[in-house]
Length: 193
Image 1 (cartoon, rainbow, N blue to C red):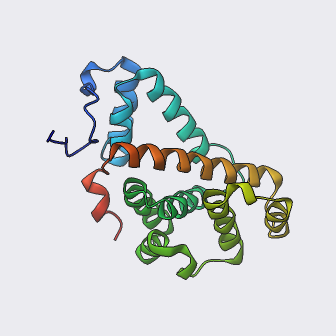
Image 2: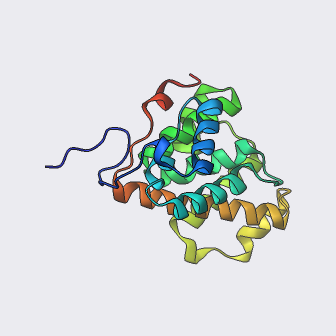
């Protein structure tokens, strides 16, 4: 049985060390280290293919940090709810830590990982997450009524687009993480508790 690198995945991707990366990714990893205190394992995994690393990191940064009517916390809540529905260990751990940090509420982060329906959320947030979960679990059943429910809760069509894109992104990344047994950085477990 092949031993698994603890920090990455069950696959042998021949991931380069940071000093073997192109200069722009060395700089990106240094920024991650400075701001987060670590380089997320998902970035290390993608580093075996610089073209995919670039595409993944650009899309992630635009979806999660870019201009939007949704807050970063709301986007992280979507990430956790979708990841919980998909039982994605990596994203539940990593994004659960982000919800704990951004909300300054360790209990909320844990409840979101376990079952967002038991968390004390605003009606707006509950509807946003219900939409993301329906999109995750039964996407063929999405209908105009689902979008109208969000509009009635105060979400714009641009916000709905962003909710759908964040949920879609995490559905993709959850499946990749599950397929390769991607492991979260151990540091996430103790953060913001």
